[in-house]
Length: 277
Image (tube, rainbow, N blue to C red; front, side, top):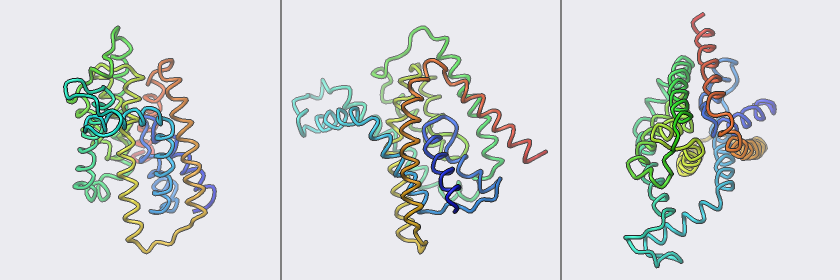
């Protein structure tokens, strides 16, 4: 890859990982539409590490609180005084996120070959971008018209698992992990801010699993590693992802999801015109 391609792809990964517009689609399209060289396993690992560090750093306080409370549910650590009948919400939230990650892990493990061989085409990306863009718009309109939103504490285990199942669907390129999880969160009655925050917290184990799988593949492969490209890609993905999370949460309640819905529809129909025109 050229330095320009490294910069563009790393920024794309960082910006689109947490926006509801599908990072996988934006990383696949340059090679299919522009004929760019595939970025390779090492680069994929680098940008996943960058985005993972960004979301963990941004939510470091929440992660710290959840970790302590989760240990308390096991009667370990400083929160061990909690009883089963009065577990802190942060402990429940940690369990919800852990269990809600299981569907994506299973689907990724069992369906990775099907996805890689048949569902990574530009046509599939165009169709999923349009379909899930409409769903996001529908959910956002409903959320905007709702006078009272369900607090995150009332999401419940079933609600968390529904969002987790949606995250598994997002393994299909063009769906958008953040987009589909926020869509279900909004449909379940959460506010835009809470839907986004739960989606971002849920992304941490998901990105960690994907990064671990890619790292294992890299270790077992004979691919040459360009350490300069890895360092640059990881750094740019980290910076862009952190900035994306920060400004997305600031602008979300002011702008809603509609700018991203419009972008998805333009991208999807534009791809269809390019492919079928």
